[in-house]
Image (tube, rainbow, N blue to C red; front, side, top):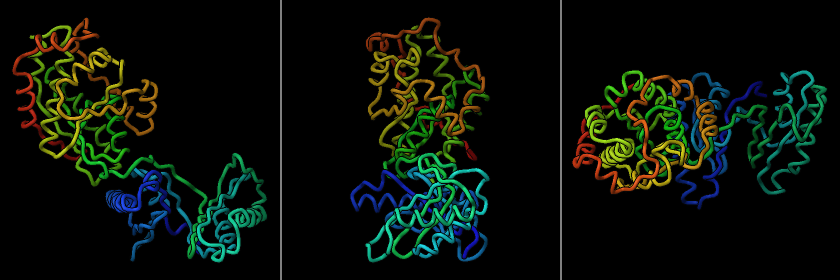
Length: 393
């Protein structure tokens, strides 16, 4: 009997409800994405795609850390959870032996439960899920003296019983869920590196999109600290999709911002947002993206009121995705903390000087267009050609 987990079980969610053809395509992509994360983090392992699970098995040669593989795979978008597990025969005695092995470190005084999932015909296994869970639970109780709590156990032992193999685990790591990255095409996301835009990019990745982050360098109104914040947060978000070229694209827009500040007043931020959308669209055309995206939340800032969003969207010719549109700020902050971007995103970079003292909150498109330079969109689209890529994020 293997004395420690010898493989990792990877569970997916939403892909499982798709048609057979789409499901197969998504699982192929998910397996590729998990392999990419393992390779990126130097974790050896062989990824197998099965209809109900992905399995990460030891490589043909070398050591294998099932726990490290499970932790890494749990970061992949599309994954619901992962478990380092012991592979064993789908027989009651073998399952009990594996579970007792894992229970060797069961904490004193901790309660437990056994959760069993069995797939196969009645002829394949001479027991039901409930029966094998009870038998294995009795073995764990005899070995540890621990009490059972089926509602809120301190530890859950899980039996995943297939027709010709079974997996026993005592640890589970939650994944982000969603869809595998690369199954929904590509979008260009405006990316400042503050609290909102990294969360928006993460949510877009979660829905299966490849995200190309674009940062506008505001010149004297931004600065190196502002750029450093964007680089750090973009790198954190992209860590879970190393197979995607999600390096930050930087567009030098200082001169354009200077001219907007001189030429416009209360509608300045709206004209800047409109220019940003045109920059993003020009990048999208170059990289083959079908849409652009922002981290805007309705009503959060003066430029994000309902009427003002209508005005800014009038500049767009591609769909504009706003994954945070209806999120309250505390929800966005909580997600930023969860995904690890909050600390860098809250770096004080002093970039709020572009905004006018009394911004317009109920703008009319005709008034905004009348105030902004006639060549605004031409200049914005030309700026996209001056972008450069920040390596290493």
